[in-house]
Amino acid sequence: MTPNAVPLVLTADGVVVLAVRRSLGSFAALQDVFAARAGVRSAAALSPPVFTIGPAFQTGGTTDGLLLEQPLELNGARSARTAVARAQLRLIQASALVQLQTLVYTARTDFNMLARAQEQLRLAQEVRRVTEQFDVLASKQVSLGARPGIEARLTSIEAARARVAEAQAVGEEQAARTLLNAYLGRAALDPIIAILPDNATLSTAQIDLSLAQSQALAARGEIAQAEATRDLPHARASLARAQGRPDLAPEFRISQITPKYMDAGLGVVVTIPLDYGTRRELIRQEELAADAAQSRVAGTQAQVRAETVQAASRLSASRAALSEYDGSIVADARAVLQSTQTGFAAGALTIVEVLNAERTFRQVTSERLGALAQVNQAAADFDRAAGVIPPVLRAELTLELNRP
Image (cartoon, rainbow, N blue to C red; front, side, top):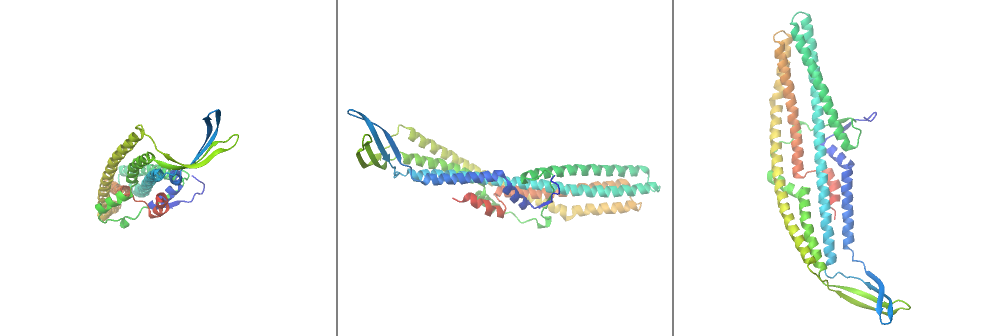
């Protein structure tokens, strides 16, 4: 732990923004995009002139000749080459978006793990405090002869179990904090306070599946990646066709350099590419690859639709479970515990009844924390399925990724 480290207070969106900004993977993905943009600019430029100097064989010996040609690419090769570079750029942009969305999901998942561990630790501390207080009360009553000695032993055992549970909760919290700190570039045990949304603020609105699926199809990087993978072979096939068409090239020629320049002149060369089958088969190969990629696009779209439906179902179910716990279950368990403790102090109830009430309260409260964690994780799963990222990142990174 960094000496005198200030606790970092984070929300789910806050941890995502921080993780993405500090991720070397995000930086590398952007660098790949920048490089691909440079490739587009390079492809859009006119092909350089061809400068040739070499011997010319003639009657009486050899001499040097010079030839300078500038292909005009009137056959469409330049625009087709640019289309290939743009398709490659779209593929790299889509791959970077997939990486970004995966990082967003991982950061939220790790944040939820820490938040749950911290809630469980607070519960374990409360249970330990209550059981120790009850153990002190039982010991006093035994010493006064109001209770049999075995009851003090039972409460002592329960207090010891509570201390063990608290120690285990401390370990779980530290492990979750270490994992999250690794994403944030901080020392392993630097303090973090994870702030979950209050359950009262969690949306319980009915999910519009049709709208959610439409948003997912438009936002998921995997679909953009599959579409770019399909478009790239089409672009390469178009380039091969263009390269097989005739082209014009202005020419400057000198037939002899030494001992003096001779026969200098200008002309126009018509290039007529020949094909022994290589280009034809290359075009066929690219077209077949594009057909296969189109099938993968359809498969990816179907998978995204299914993931969205599954995530929406889990989110609705987890919200319903949490509402049950917050409706009456936890409140009733707490009321039963308080009543049994009061009854025990008054001598009206046995130690077994109190311990059972304590265990019920502990179990119900733990289950409620689990239900809250499931809601938050289900929300992260749903956002992942729908391709949602925090608005600040959408403005900060996706515009950069998608800029031509």
